[in-house]
Image 1: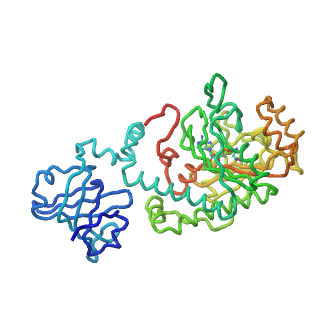
Image 2: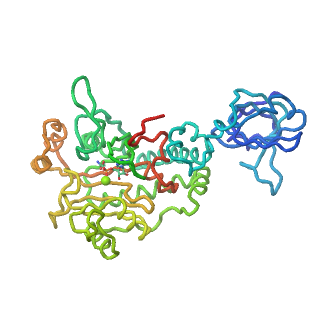
Image 3: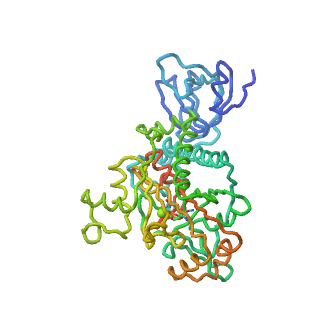
Length: 443
Ligand code: 4AD
Ligand code: MG
């Protein structure tokens, strides 16, 4: 019978039927003269395929290499009990052809460069590295995670918007702005879509975006990229408590949605065997108590070896030490104004601290930054003055406070940091397709 062309993921529906499958040679094992095992990969899955007898004797068979593309035709069979094969079935090939030959040797196996190889080689060869089982699993989980965020916001009735990436305003401080020549004017790559999301509230209510944000970070760390995917939401008429609850609920719901998909769950379990979805209430801790915690645990400031003081920024390393020691998600709140962004309002009880929050996850540290927003026109103008920012380019942002203002807040979550936590990757550089960081803008 004429064989139907199928994807590997569909193989279960074709047991005992003759099919044709296209793909890449992911693994190759020759057993004697008359038997070859090919694990075929087509992006939808892996299929163990067996070539017998004269099928192994041709020139193509004798010179077959890893990463070559082939078309295999044969019957899908359930594998015998006790024999391991991806998907629980294998293809008994009766006809096959080479589509595109790969050279074999070192080039063909770059997709299996061990993860302790020279990292710069991994990034230089990233286009081949992503063919590997681990890298491709992370990218597939990422796809499911992005969908889960969209489904989460959709289920709450938020609209998705797509703000511009080319802007003339800053959100998170001048020191990490990437600037470029925009028809003779200075412009920047956006650091955050927050200000634009705020302008959508009066017409669309709660909104979210999944867009690229850009930061000219001066050094390369485990969790900083120059370009990252930023999931941001903005919600009108909420309190600070509502904001904290919303962040916690979102993280739990997104994980639950991904976990409910067997294929995604299997990949996460493979990448991060210790992982279980968070169910307990997140720890809620004030900045002032974090400072106390660091001092009680003998963690000192890096610059002078002294105790932390109220007002100090908590850098990446001590933040991670605290989060790892507590080993639970922490909503860290009430940061002092001077170490936070200009748009964050002071609390009523204590003008030294703001209605601000970071969500810290074990293994990574901060994955979310959020706050309520100053919503009074005069207060916001005063905040610009304190920051030394010219308000002219922000006329549209100030207008929001003129034409019907309201208490509102929102947050931003770094998708790569979320994935580093979920899939237990050492660095966010493994959690995006082609990482951008100091010294790398290729491939
Ligand atoms: O804390 P950030 O700077 O907050 C904002 O940009 C707010 N305007 C967001 C908002 O309220 N709408 O960034 C938010 C998150 C961080 O918690 C982190 O997960 C991620 O964005 N992030 C980065 N991820 C990778 N590389 C970088 N250089 C990042 N900078 C921030
Ligand atoms: Mg932050």
